[in-house]
Amino acid sequence: MDEHTGYQSPLSGRYASPQMQEIWSQQRKIGTWRRLWLALAESEQELGLDITNEQVAELRDHLDDIDFEAAAAYEKDLRHDVMAHIHVLGDIAPTARPIIHLGATSQFVNCNTEMLQLRDATQLITTKLAKVICNLGTFAKEYRDLPTLGFTHYQPAQPTTVGKRATMWAQDLALTLEDLEFRLTAMRFRGIRGATGTQASFLDLFGGDHDKVVALDKLVTEKMGWSSDKQLSVTGQTYPRIVDAHILSSLAAVAATAHKFATDLRLLANRGELEEPFEKKQIGSSAMAYKRNPMRCERVCALARFVMNMPPNALQTAAVQWMERTLDDSANRRLILPESFLALDGLLDVLCNITDGLIVHESKVQANLHQEMPFLATERLMMEAVKLGADRQDAHEVVRQHAIEVARCIKEDGAENDLLERLSCEAMFKDVDLTMATEPSDYIGRAPQQVDAFCDEIIEPIAQRYSSMTTEIAELRV
Image (tube, rainbow, N blue to C red; front, side):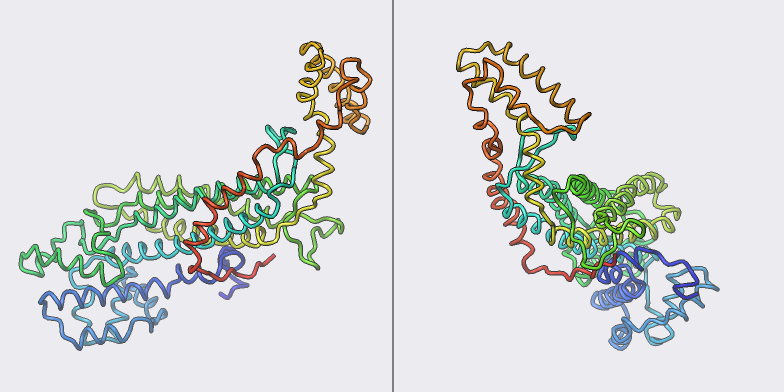
C-alpha cells in the first residue's frame, strides 16, 4: 500500500519534524543494533575471546546497508525480528556470522537502542523547548511595561503587563525544561545483562572470570558513547519500564504547560488583544471569510492532550512487568514511546512559530483595560475619600451600590462605564481627584522589574546553555 491507499500516521505525515522521525526510524533502530553487535564483538575480542580482526572489520563495513525486505522475509518464517536481522547481517557478513550476538539476548539490542533513542529524542525536545522559552523572553522584554487587564477566575482583576504575563508562560516552560534536563542526566545505559539480567551467558564465555564480564559491560557501554558510571546497577531482562513512565511524565508536563499557554492565547485572541501569526493568504473558515481562527494554538492543545494521556499507559506497563520481564510491554511501547515524542515535537514546532511572531494589538489592550479601570480604582478612591474625612464603610457602600448598577447597565444595556461620573456627584467624593486613580501604570506594581529580573536570572542562562545547540524548525504545515 502507498500513502494514499493505506493508513499513515498524521504524526509522521503532518506534524513531526524530519529530525524526530529519523530518531525513531527503522534505519536508526537497526543501524544501532548493528553498532551494538560491533561494540560487543570488539569488546569480546579485546578481552580475549576468539574473534578475528576480519570478523570485526566485516561487521564494521555493514552498519547501515540494511535489506529490510530480506529481514521481512526472514521474520515471516522465524517470527522473531532480532533473529531476522541477525540472519540478514550474517548473509552479508558471512565470516562474522558465527560471532554476531555472541552471549547476548534480544534485549541487548532492543533496550540499549531504545535508551539511545530516548536520550537523543529528549535532547531534541529540550533544544526546541529552550527556543520557545527564549522567544517568550524576547517578547516579554518588548512589552515589559505595557499595562493589561489581569484576570483571576477569568474575571477582571488588578492590572499586570503583557510582558509579565509572558514571563509566567515562560516560567512554566522553564520548569519543565529543568525537569527534562534532569531526566537526561539520570538516564542509565542497560549494557550487557543476558536473559534474566544475571550475565550468566557472558560468565560462561569467559570461563567464570567475573572481572572480564564486568570489563565487557563497561567496554560496550563506553563504545556506545556512554560513561561507564552511567549504567544501571542491576536489571532483569529489560531496563526498568518505570524509566519510560518517568520520561513520558516529563513530556506530559511540557505538553500541559504548552496547553495552558495556547489556551490563554486563544482567550486573549477572543478579546482582540493578542493573536498568533496569520499568513497573508491563510483561510480561517471555509464559510466565514472574515475569521482569523487561532488554529495554531488549537493544534497545540490537541497534540498536548494526546501527550498528556500517555503517562498512565506507561505506568500500567511498568506495573505489570512480572518478575524478570513479560512481553506484553513490547507492542504497547512500539506505539507510546515514539508517538509521545513525535506529537510533542510537532507541538513544539508550532509553539516556536507562534512565539516567534506573536501579534499584540496595543490599542485593544488599552481599551479593554480602560473599560475596567474605574472598577479597579475603587479601593484607591475610597482611601482618598477617607483621607478627606469620609467614613470608610459609608464610602464602601456608596461605591458598591454605584458599581453594581454600572455593571448591570454595561451587561444589559451595552452602556459605557460611567462609574467615575456617578461618584463625582456624591458629596464624599466631590473633592477627590477621580482621574488620578485611573492611570493604569500606577497599578502594575513591580511587573516591569520582575520581567527584567526573570530574563536575567532564567532566560539568559537558558540562552547561554543552548546557544550552540541549534536545530532547524520544520516548516509549519497548516
